[in-house]
Picture 1 (tube, rainbow, N blue to C red):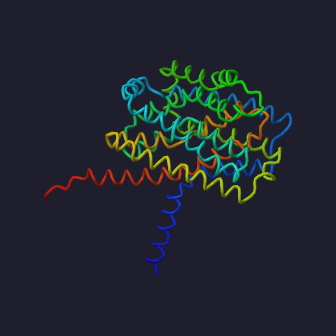
Picture 2: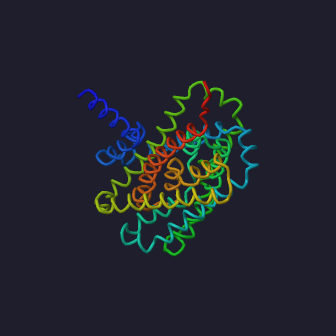
Picture 3: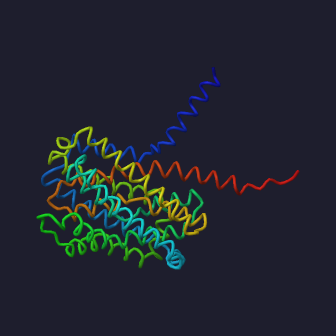
Length: 344
């Protein structure tokens, strides 16, 4: 009986780890629920929006301070790897999203499909790409450079893609230049300042990593709460039904599967080492929530923001759970392959 109980307890613990039900994931769900029942609106929403933008600028300042010069130099030299990651992030993802339009548009509706397509135009994640690459024993230096480069170039490429493929054939008066300037001021300028002040800022950050992590996650939670509050006030949950949510989850899952399969086989066919294959796999298959929601707030002014950011929120959770499982599997595989059996 005790053995059965132990196995059941172990199985439940493994299942929780498998589903990657970490505190941040739970808090993200709580923010959506809080915004659904107690949305912030009116003057309070305006003040909260200003505070959120300040927090976002500080967040990217800290991101800039984290990136070492050595990682930049080492990463830049690995241009083949970065080219493949760039191709997956800004070519393969958008092509799959555009080809899926005849299927997804009738299922999701225009606003959710716009959000799905916008997600395909976003850059890769930074922290989770590096973290998963590290866990799986991949090329961490290349992942740092590739993911950071993806975010920097995405500040310019994403608005242009939105202009061409979302607003290009609509009646909306959209100016990508204005959006690029706003995104540059909000995200890029703080990032560069952080990089310039790294010798002074990074030692302080290294002393309080838990506070830096809490600020990082807290900023994303603020952004999500703000975006969903405005969406709920505009009637988000009256427009999105259960069946539509199921279709959206399935669409994000299929998209991630396609990209991951392609990233795995393409990197292998191109002759990259195991460590480089892992970096390409994790950097090329993910999309950023941290940059995505602030960009959406700038690019989709006057549009149903909750509908636009819902796909990236769902995709974000799916990619974290899936990558967590795969990273742990690759780490175990690496350990087995490098275990040396010594004779007695």
